Image 1: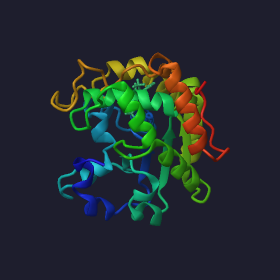
Image 2: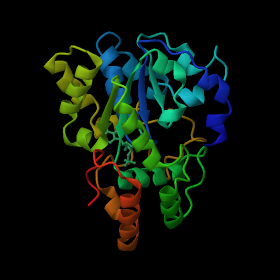
Image 3: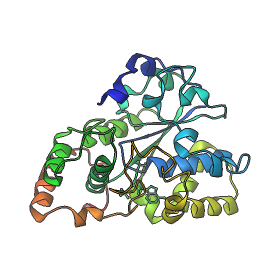
Length: 277
Ligand code: A3P
């Protein structure tokens, strides 16, 4: 973890959730922004459409661990909407207790490790708050070793997957499924959230959250954030949005090493990712 996420540890851990809070939990670069936009559109697209053109996504769905510096000031406490949509990258064991106590609904998004790693690499290249990415080969090894901000991908996806077995208010979804059929995934989300949304609106939302639309939209592409934090010349936030980009980065030797290591770490056969071949 880095200072930006540990500075206010006690405040974050003591965060008081409300029963209707909705959490979107992910390992970094697994599709957080995408699902945040979908949730925001499902809840507020009809009643407050101006949000889409006037409030950046990181304010509509604020980042829990980055926000709680001063409870009167931070973005989560400033939310006036119901429900509050809150984003976190915490591994399951660090989610503040209050969310469990209130049985809050949680949407977890997972992405196959290879593409997740590549996306994280480019993010670390362009983000000044994150540790420097360094050489790809070093980054590759650090990812396998779990030396990443928010820890090991393997522990993260497994930890949340195990939790799903006992906590029914957790919806576990996959980036690859969203790419394959966004509308179907929106349907599943609506069922989980108990939302009744017309097919026309769901179709409209599917269009609004297509990669090219989100890439062009200033309120979703992070371009409203200070250039001191993100250097878009090095890499855009909305980079490619593809499945299988790892094939442009992994060498044959890296791929073999990765696959061998993956077998050792991913022991639960019920958790299967696509696009690793
Ligand atoms: P790439 O770097 O592979 O392009 P997060 O929001 O968790 O930081 O994840 C960012 C990743 O999700 C980036 O992946 C980004 O391009 C991708 N992404 C965001 N919105 C998307 C969309 N609407 N369709 C496809 N991919 C999207």
